[in-house]
Length: 251
Image 1: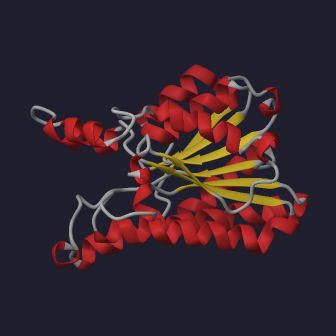
Image 2: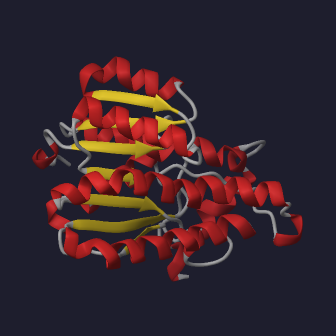
């Protein structure tokens, strides 16, 4: 899948050190974009910087830290001069904890990363997009934002919040040239889900068997969908939630 339109485009990706975020960064780089990664970890970011040199840059920090977010966005604008596409991909799980097993520290940690981080990064990037009356925002929701069982109490709450936020973002700014949509993945084999493959991998096997497609997806498959959602082919798509779940939610 090649999108020549991404040559010269600037993409800002949160959670770009591994998993879906790294796959997104790689796919846009492969399609000629300039990419800026933002994550708390650096190993994957450094690797991408070595591979793509002047077309990839990054900042290490947390999406829940307003000062770090501001510094990252400012560095991106100083180097690449604009942000055409924002991929809000950073997120953390909650261990499938029910509400009575969710203490305040877990609640705050998940909400700070998944929801507050989304808000802080979007608000830091959006003014530059509005000046040009052009920009695409793709948020990372989950089937947990649609049906129960994809996470615990706070993860599910956070993903429902992400979907609502994305729809409101589209509602408020579509006429100002901003296009916002969400992707809702199901079982994606990423480092974040490595616990499901621990031991004999019984949990991973159960998830695959319960998925109509009969398997887990790869981060690249989510990245390929992102290429389409951010492209001109999807220009009339606003406030949508695209499921990539192997049929999980049709059961």
